[in-house]
Structure formats: C-alpha cells, structure tokens
Image (cartoon, rainbow, N blue to C red; front, side):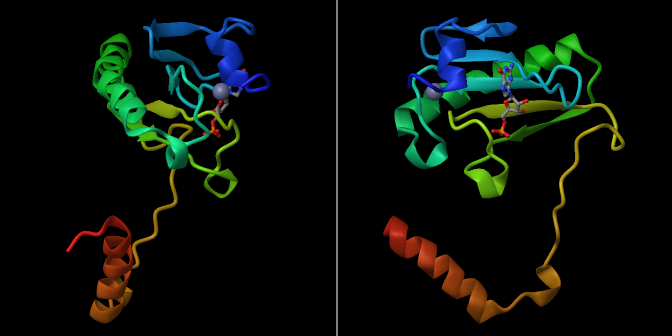
Length: 142
Ligand code: 5GP
Ligand code: ZN
C-alpha cells in the first residue's frame, strides 16, 4: 500500500528501530514507548487488521511472538506483558496495517492500563446462550 506508514517502514522509506526481521515479519520499537521496550510486530504483507488477515499470515505472525516476547523479557526487568491488537477506530486502531503491540509491564502503576469491566453480576443464561448461538451460526459449529 503506497500511503501506509508501516508498509513504508517495511520498504525502508521511513526510519524505524528494528529489533527482528525475516522474509514475512518485522518487529520494531513503537514510537510512543508506552512502557520501556514497547514493540510492534507486523506482517510485511499489508492487511488492514484482523478482519482481513489471511489465516496463513496470522499463523506466521503469531508464531514469531513468543521468541520476540522472550527477548524483551530477557532484555528488560519486566514483570509481565500485555499483548494487544486494536482493530478499527472504535478499538483504538490508528495505523491501518495490522500490528501486534508487545507492552512490557513493570508495575501496576506504569503507563499502560485497561478498563475491563466485569459484568458477570448480570449473567443471564438465556442471553448467554443466544450470544453463543449467534457466533456458532457464523462458524457453523454445533
Ligand atoms: P494502534 O493505535 O493503531 O494500535 O497503534 C499504532 C501505533 O503505531 C501507536 O502506538 C504509535 O505510537 C505507533 N506509530 C505510529 N506511527 C509510527 C511510526 O512512524 N514509527 C513507529 N515506530 N511507530 C509509529
Ligand atoms: Zn501497510
């Protein structure tokens, strides 16, 4: 994609601090460094996000992640890591070339956070079944 920032990074047209590269996948430091070592892992082949990611590309992308995550774990004194993928604007995607964030976590008070409300107190068995059925119908799974 001509005007995609991450495709430009892949082609070397704009600079990036690369930490891993092979024929299919590139990993480089996220400019924002939400926490120290914050890294993006991308497929070299353009896909907008998970909704148009070919399964083979997804497999190749994800199979590199444990190795890169472990490199961060060894390089920095992190205590954990959030692995995050934003899809579409509503979900905070700002660059429309599929990417996985590796965000090292150093403490509960570092610069990363998630709002994750637990609605289990409103559990409704019928509604639960309806939701699962809607998904199963699309997957043709019984
Ligand atoms: P998103 O919000 O789409 O999940 O994440 C996009 C990420 O790309 C942001 O965290 C942002 O800091 C990072 N980013 C945007 N432009 C550049 C760039 O030119 N170089 C690098 N290294 N990161 C970028
Ligand atoms: Zn792209």
